[in-house]
Amino acid sequence: MHGWRLSLAVVFMVAACGGGGALGTSVQGLASSDVPSGSTHCPQSGDAAKISDKDTAGEWQYQQQHGASSGDIEVYAENSAACKGMPDIRPGGGKIVGSAVIHYKDAATATSATQGMFGANPSSIPGAVKGSASGFGDNSAYIFAGTTGRVIWQNGSTVAAVVRDSIAESDFKKAAQGVKGRVS
Image (cartoon, rainbow, N blue to C red; front, side, top):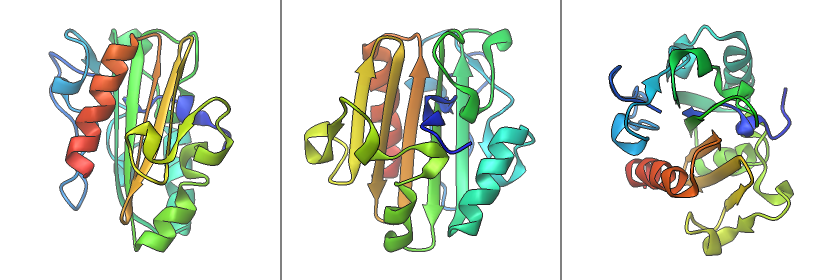
C-alpha cells in the first residue's frame, strides 16, 4: 500500500460539483479553480479522517500513527466514472488529478512523512527534479513523464502532494501551483 501510489488519485479535479475540502487548519488541497474546466469533484474527497474509501482510509490511519493530525484529500476527474481514491490513481485510469495536504504535529515528523506519505518518497522518484530546483522547496520532488505527474513537498509541519493521470502538463502545473499557494 505504500509504494509511490501517489500516482494515486490524489491528490485530485472539479467544476459543476463544487470546490475542495478543508483541514482543521483551513488548508485545502485542490480547488475547482485549479483543475480543467468541466472536471468532476469526486466523492473520495474531503477531510481525510472522514473519507470512506478503504484504501485512502487505511493510508490515513497509517499517517495518523506516524504523527498526522489533520488532512485534506481532493480528487477531480473527467467524469464520475473516472473517480477513484487517491491511492488508486495510476496510469490508464482516465483524466484524473488528486491532492493530499497533511498536517503533522511538527516539522521533524513532517520531514519523516515525506519519506512515505501515501507511498511518496522524493528521494526515490527516478528522473524527478528534486529540492529547490523543483520550485517546491528544499524537501521536494517533481516529475512529469508520459501519463504520470507527481509532486510532493514539505512546508514546515505540512506535507502536500499532487498526482495526475492523463492530463496535460500545463494543467498539472496549474493544479500543483494552486495547492502550493494555499500551503505556503
